[in-house]
Image 1 (cartoon, protein in one colour):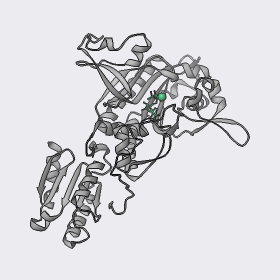
Image 2 (tube, rainbow, N blue to C red; image 1 turned 90 degrees about the horizontal axis):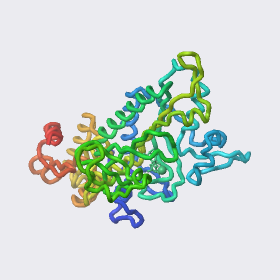
Image 3 (tube, rainbow, N blue to C red; image 1 turned 30 degrees about the horizontal axis):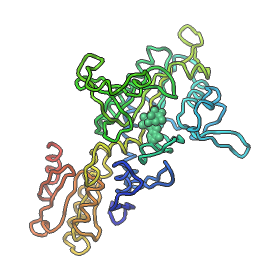
Image 4 (cartoon, rainbow, N blue to C red; image 1 turned 30 degrees about the vertical axis):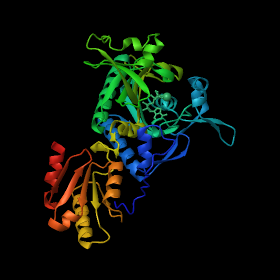
Length: 426
Ligand code: ATP
Ligand code: MG
């Protein structure tokens, strides 16, 4: 991809209505643009990151034996009346009517639709366990959409639903998803905590959240400084506990001291048990030939929220510092004098072709601007490796390499692979 061709409208100034750093940087680096409150268009650079996260999620879900489906965004009222959520959900559920005055909602989540699918198509315990997932647009008419795509009204979620014949098997399905979520966030390259949580409007008993640690997190979590113990303080408050009072106290699991941290909830896993399957009569024949209601789990990951969370955790005053696994490009070739000097243009283009054929995702800055402007934009969009082809190349055929994390090096084009490996090791 050439900078002169890609639709990448960067901004010099901090947009006024963006409070948190990820929102500011996503606008400034030309990743997203707002359409209306809580609703955004993803531009090419942003979409590349979103797709990378989506693919990591898809690969790990498939690896865990879950199967991908795609359910509709528009859902009929009658399914939501069966679970009484048409009443319970309140104004967060966006309701619409068709030309025949029939009522529908835009799906904020899909328990009703999936339970309907399962009750109509699964007859026996022999067809279980089953775990179905989708990566799909959700709509929630949030009371306070804010922080850009972090709390949007329209957003991309991976939601999955497991169905089992008994509680023991549900435990297994749940633990498998918990492990899968750990792998996903590890692969993306973010620091996170698994936190005991409130099940909220979705219902059920056991639930845990995955929080990316970041100063601008909306949630407050109490974590032990020497074990895995972590709890959303929402839970403590609803139990009538004062928070403040936990600070510096010994952790309830007996290991370490409690510290208060800010987190961004990027994933949420629930054991729903039989809440939905009883309400919607989703039963199958068990080993004894008796009809039995299914045990259900549901598991969500905020795919679009993860993009913002990754930026909250990885940035400096110059811009984004992408973790390699989700960077929009791996290498940025900064060609200084591309339009003036044929030697530079040829060297930069050859390097672009060479790196692309080696399998790297490369962007070549062929614009007329000088070094300062190009490096500023490079640092803003946060590509891990920047290669400068300029004066030094004309003098001694050496290229200059600058890692976004601050490391730098110089060398000949032939040695590029070795230099990249060296960057990776340190
Ligand atoms: P929150 O407490 O942040 O509102 P939630 O508990 O309502 O989240 P879930 O219903 O569990 O969220 O949805 C699964 C995942 O979808 C969340 O962990 C989060 O990553 C993401 N998500 C939820 N609401 C939004 C939103 N308004 N914008 C972007 N992502 C969201
Ligand atoms: Mg919510």
